[in-house]
Image (cartoon, rainbow, N blue to C red; front, side, top):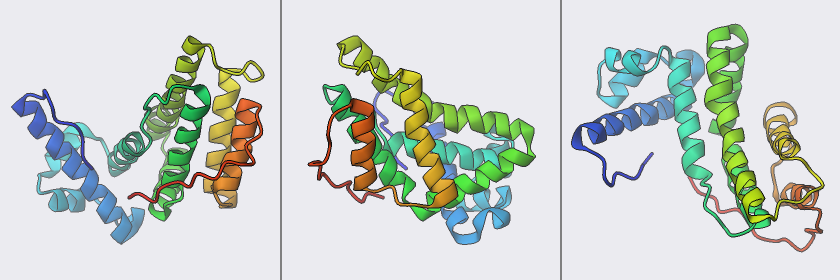
Amino acid sequence: MEVEQDSVRPGRKRSQERRLAILTASFELFSEVGYPGLTIEGIAARAGCGKQTIYRWWPSKADVLLDALATKADMHVPLTNQGSYEADVRIFLRDSFALARRPQVIDMLCALMAEAQTDPGFGHRFRGGFLQRRRDALSTILSRAVERGDLPNHLAPSTVLDIVFGVIWYRMLATRQPLDQALLAELMQTLTGTHQADYRERSPDTS
């Protein structure tokens, strides 16, 4: 994981680098040992830091993974302004689908959702730190559309959010049906009210 480091003070930069090293270590170890085998001790050893450093920032391994997943989503689904509601939503869906197709991301989200069902405290943090965070990201796009005056009037912004994430989460976690270009075209038609049959842009396979 990488972040922009311009205009960051040395102390803050070192803390951010250590944080990202821990998040990267948690991702790597999750891929190797799964959620049951993941430990704070293992993450600390892989990241080259002490356990107390991790506990100073996160109360549990689930919270480390939550931060890692949310950070990865922020990085791989940027909110660049493409100049129109249709273009912004299309890029958001393309990038979200590409991330959601990764088996590691699917497995991690399943593990965190299961943890959220058994730990009410973590469940609250999960809803705010990931589910709401992704809705807020798309809300930024919708707010831009309102300011430009190009948000279609056939759907309320809250309905757009429910449609997009309802489809993504249901396909990721329940049916495992593909998040492919055909679905993207269908969603775009629903969200914009225009025919998308000729849309052929392919999502880049980035890691």
